[in-house]
Structures are given as structure tokens and as C-alpha cells.
Length: 113
Image (cartoon, rainbow, N blue to C red; front, side):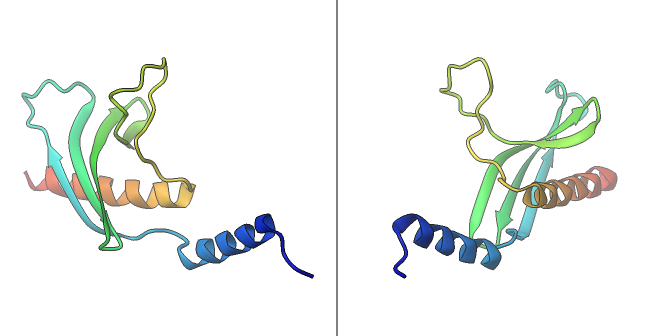
């Protein structure tokens, strides 16, 4: 029986998802602020490279009420009441992978200073 466009697209998407379960962080650079800098809860900026193919910049290491987390860049032209991120991981696994890599590098850089 021939497939309609929706079934074909779903099948193609399923194949791609299994092929790339999670992007791998291949390089991390963290730039901590000096103690005197008054950036509030933002402790560092970070840059990551995924699969040696895609670079994400403007990530922030933030000291929140529940510990450190990674914040993603916001759209500066968005006029709504909420923030709107320019890019962000879709899956929990990918978000955790990126966050763990950045926070480990942050601890390494801060500990060495």
C-alpha cells in the first residue's frame, strides 16, 4: 500500500532520530568572570562545539537557587513578557549532556585559578 506524505515524513524522521540520539560535545571553552565583576548570578560565559560541526556561543553558567545551571542565549528583539531562547536542546538527554560538559569544564577552570 503506498504511503502518504505524513507517513513517509514520520518514517524519515524516525530514522534520523535513531541515527543521532544525542549530539556529542567535542570541545568546551569556559570564560569565568573575575571575582570583582558585577554580573550578578552569571558566573561565566561558555562556547561548545557539537560533533566537530556546530559551534554554540553565548551560553551562560548561572548560579541559581538550586545550584549551577546553563542558560541559553535569548532573542534580544523579542518583545514578549517571557524570554525566548535563540537555540536550545530539544531532548532532556542532550540538555544534560551539554550542561554536564560545561559545568565540569567550569569547575576545572575555576579550581585551577
